[in-house]
Length: 222
Image (tube, rainbow, N blue to C red):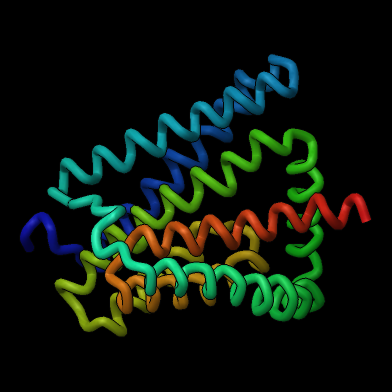
């Protein structure tokens, strides 16, 4: 296998590595070190750690496997319009339809998710950067830019789409979020396949997260 062709095993290894490096490590640092600082400083330290670890992880993966990051390649008005449409679809389909259903079925996961939302309100600006900027950029580069694009060179488009979407869902620990992320991953994968534009996927992901994030605070005021 050449370095720029991704196998399913390699993709799984990348996701496990990403969860450890960009998920578990920051959590450990937060518990062992950052918690001794005041809460606002701890939030910024955690955010800085996430930025650094995500950047290093993406760069190391890119260099080791000779992968390409072409965020603005194939940029078009069609791709931008589809991205905007997808973000609205995600909000209506997931937040307004599927998520309430999943909440009723998986009540414990829903409760954990609500607790997480409560924590987001403590430091809105820090969490906006983390959820609406870092997550869409890092996750789309990894899942659509590296994994989906790489799997397409080794497997059928259907297999590449399915595996990349499942791995995208794995990145979201909460079970309610995982089911929604699977649906979201399939649509974002189709968007990438249709437009060949990583920027369109990042934009759709950013807009959806931003809409959902702002609604959280709007509902608090209402």
